[in-house]
Amino acid sequence: MKPIGCFNVLALIGIIAALLTVYKKRNITETSTWLIFYLLSTAITWLGEFIVLGLFDSYAYKPGLFQNPWAENLTGHLILNSTLWPGTALLVAGYRLKFRGILVITAGFLVLEVLFLRMDLYEHHWWRYFMTALAICFYLVLLKLWFPLMNRKRYGTVRFISLYLASFVILHLPTPLLLLYGKQYYAFGLPCDTVRASVIFILLYQLLETLIILFFLSRKTWVGNLVPYILSMTGQIYLASQNILIIQEDWKLGYTLLLYALTLTLCLLMEKYTLKAKNDG
Image (tube, rainbow, N blue to C red; front, side):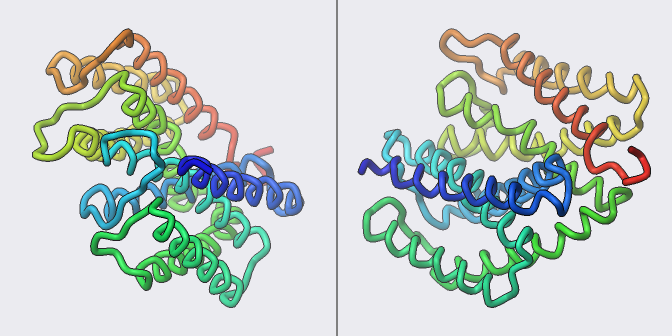
């Protein structure tokens, strides 16, 4: 099996775990709430990976698709942290696994890590096995506690944080994909690899952007719904005019703006129709 196939097998396991959990535990909450939980679980893994891998180069993924090591890292990150980790989080939350079950899952993840290291699909820099174990336990316990809180408190800070993290995933996802496919990147003058620098800049940018967007969307007025589109489009146009956003090949800025419009619309619909209090209908 090619290296990328091994990554895809793990991704499939995560997706199957998520789908089975949603189906088997569909009486616990709405499918839309499970989707929000999946997205926020993904966001947490993305932010954790951004710190330990993106900023501190703790390890490396080797899916075997690119010559550039940071394109390899980005690919491995997107595959595993968007499927296996959130799928496992749904499994733990849906079945309310106790700490013993979390320890079993952690042991399974460590076995996979050993296998990936021996197969040269992954390598440690300064990372250690006990760090993986601590990260998995913390992640799963946190999300096990967050799910019932999010499902019950569909208002205030809990709802805002849940929708913020879910919206960030929706808004950010097209950016690394366009980067990997060579359509665009962000040149912000950071003294590191172009792929790495691009991801660092746009992730921080979109974390702030998502916060502003959700603030206006939660106002629930037509003005509040319109402002995020104006701000986001203007922001990308400005970045392009300053040669920070670099468009490549046959891609056009208009296509990027169209993707922004699509993701913003998804965020708007999510804020309007999901995580609603029971008496809101």
